[in-house]
Image (cartoon, rainbow, N blue to C red; front, side, top):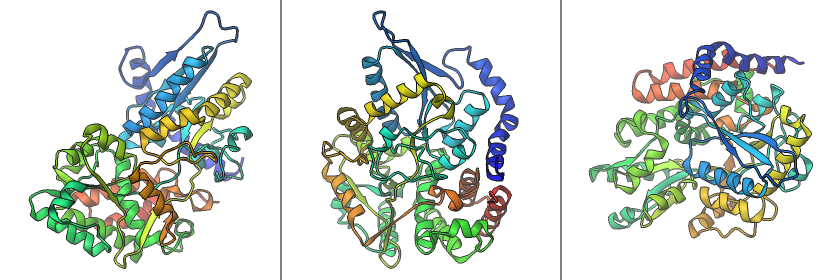
Length: 448
């Protein structure tokens, strides 16, 4: 076992020490229905089934309602046609602090599921918790990035750009246009605020939501200029106090200082941002196409607009590169031939034409499988897909979307977003937040 593996395991083991009180509480609560961290038993059995029953545990990120609905729909469909499979969906209740933390806690409690939606693949692969993806599943896709030379994940959907989701009807009534430069975007915010309505809503109650605006400015000021910035930071060649990160923080701070953000953002959850838009309490929010279906569900008459936020020179930097994330089989499940077989069956079922279409329609996603002509994109999604084909839009990865030598230190993301919240709330200065970011990075970095 090399140093990196030991370091990863030590990081995961921290939860066995830090969370021990929570584990004891959780174990007590598990005997009380509906309380704490629970496992919902979704069992289907058939007396006439000749196949031996197989018990399977699954978990996925549950912070987004559309994502949750899309996956659960397919799980329910699978159970109906595979009566010998007993599926337990492992639920978790602290999405506000981060999905990786939830998975680490499940591992610490000895409850790491058989099939997991994986987002921090490098960390969990280094800890020996993941198995190589079956070749029959790998063959469904054109491109899956490798981690440590191995393919661990089946992507759920193509990476799509983030941008401003807005009330198109209000834009039309007020004679507003989508901005061509960042200065025009700020002028747009000023016009809207002068009308007595907040231009932007932010769901800061969910810590991961802070990544939308943070990553946007980091793309503009850091990663568009140097896509190896993370590894250089680990090597001590660059600093968070350098001009690029500082400009990103100052642009963030301006949005809050100019009163463009709905007050009390720390008490607004991501799902609540939809209500602010459909009720006209805010006009825009930084998010992604997965919000389209949720907005239409909340208000079928809501007219959705969507545009990327340009930088000061009018250049547009967007997400769009493939990530090593998605469905992953755990190493313990792979060691059980029956479970491994059922997981492979489930993944083929998930990506079948009929079922995969249900997931993509629920989340407003773009397919990533080789055969995806069965998906009829909406006019708005077709516009988004054109962004990905536009050579003038530079496709990049966000701070936490790198792996290998370019990966951020384990646990850094959440600590960093906490700093961002403190800085935007006024409890920490920009300079102090950047200095603290350097300290946390060095404290947690992985030496390779």
